[in-house]
Length: 250
Image 1 (tube, rainbow, N blue to C red):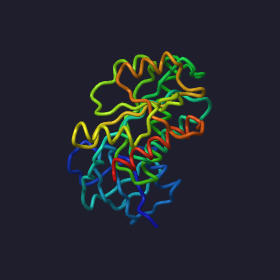
Image 2: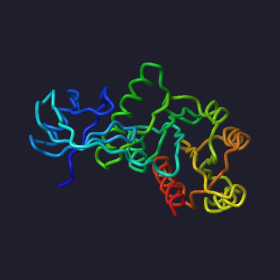
Image 3: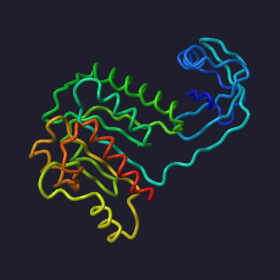
Image 4: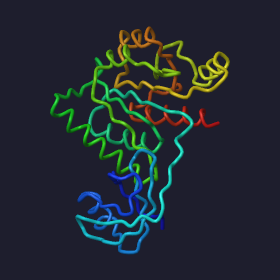
């Protein structure tokens, strides 16, 4: 059985004990049924981990005794997902799978064809929900890094302001969209290396509008095909992240 995992943000750099929050204590002791003496790997979501022993299995105040600390190595590349908000619960699934794939940042977007519109209060609650989904996924897959969930913003503003990326890609159904291998080969030939910071832009049901696609290209996004079939937006996001991650690790 794999070690139990718990999220913790200690106030000290080298703590001897870790006191879990009520939510983390409940999840560890009640949901996962960890008992005193069990090994628990605590992590802060920023690559720092502590291999611990559960010494107090309180349901709302579990305590871990630190055996040793370790620093996880980040991936050799950093991926950002700009995702137009889909209908229903699909964004939750996208956040979970993106976390499993090691994405560093997720930017929820309202595009012209987005059918989900969030006011400030609903947006804040959604972000909290997505952060919880990312945390649950990180614990399940052993990812010591939690992705940043950015505030909801319009696709047009994000396209225009996206800076600091080696490579910006937009999944496209339009004729002339290139294959990912072609785009990466051109980058390698021009820069002499693979991209270290890449951004994928994924549209909503019905894709981005022609005006949005034109804006993206004028902002430096490369239109990339995901194949001959029309994918659901949640499938497109995970497929795009998976193939790019595979190519950058090759």
